[in-house]
Image (cartoon, rainbow, N blue to C red):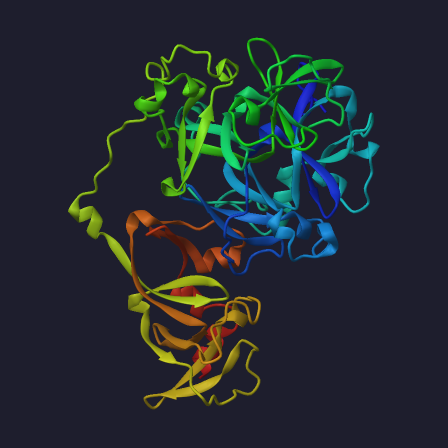
Length: 516
């Protein structure tokens, strides 16, 4: 329990739901809260693995908590479809590497008093193993309770067959990037922001300035003759909290009903202040070089005095003003000096690759399979064919062998790569007229034709765009050790790079090839 309670007697938590069950994680264990990005399936992983996600150049595994807790298909609304519209991705760190936890909905952020936190046994739930819990938040005074998850054993249990080289068995090895930076370096390089929406526009505040986020209460105490942005007061843990409407403060569209929305409780020199917004959308870690100062023409205007900068995301397609909690409530009252004097500079020297470095790249034959892209070294691929009309069955062959065909007088076994890799049938197939392709590979004397969904062509991947793949199982790690991450024209591609020798040595395939 000492790990749960802080010295001041309170602890901040992220509250979320999975299959209608209320759960929580300590806020300081959550690196980011995001909308789920596009996931790339990876073969030979545990059943709970939803796929791989790419985040700021790093590749991380994403675990579906509904699958972990045995609640798959029982999300909000009772249907699996549509649930993803409200889903969120909680990124935590395990063994020094980021891991994504896919949840149904994030309820909010809140500080919890010590007397509401108990051992997990105080709120037993037979559907969750007690070893996966770090405690329980008790319900009371109109507030819901929640079970506190312990992410480390939860993640380790999904990857029980892993072990670091030379390390103890059962230790997960998410080798997605280089060793993590120290906390001091991370703080220097990144800014953690809470993204808010006001009048359908996005704004942000530093996480350090936000104490918690709570729903707008049903009862708000109005203040007579107050300015329009001073909405009134509410009670928060037996203390009065003044409420400021950002919509009114910024002079945006006509105000909606104050009873709808969220209150971000800010730490200010005058004490806690509640900022009323429509929604708290995300928590992002943004590199500081992507937070630009306010343009000088705007910075000298008093209306922009409350902005620390502008975050550029998604290649500049998404711009989010970064507000200053200290100057926010002086909006419009400044002398027009703006941020020109104290805005952070983000200029730096760009690293220019030499011509020799630009030429260092590997060529791969890239094909599509079950909604993902895979690559094999060009040297290992003999040719690529259309799938033949007729295939001769091979008696007593494993189920992943579709049969044999002849190629220039030699017998070629055809391997259904989906079945070999235990990928779902039917996912990611082309149109009715597309019979797929056969990728003929060889390693030594062994040769096989791999049945795939379609071809993406030959792709040269720079050395700098190739990194280690996260290890989700020993079988996967032997077959897919690297991932190519490409970005061109706003399109992001994640290519799983296979080792052809390991592929031809999988399961009973090596013995089969020797006998054919």
